[in-house]
Image (tube, rainbow, N blue to C red):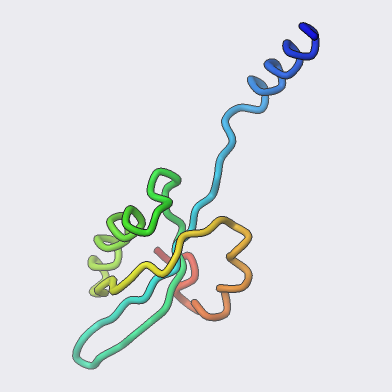
Length: 94
């Protein structure tokens, strides 16, 4: 039993920390003329909630003249493929 426990600890140390990828999909707008867009962006793992993702993305988008209206969801890499076509040029841009 001790050998198994030691082996498990060694594997965990060698493997290092697991890196979870987090993404958010969102809706943005610009006024005059009104322009609405959908996009997908990677957010830091610490900001993998809707509210935290909003706080991270809003200033990045505002710097390019966009107003972040809503973060629809946060998700892992398994949700990227299904959203890529809808996001178009705003896929992982911000």
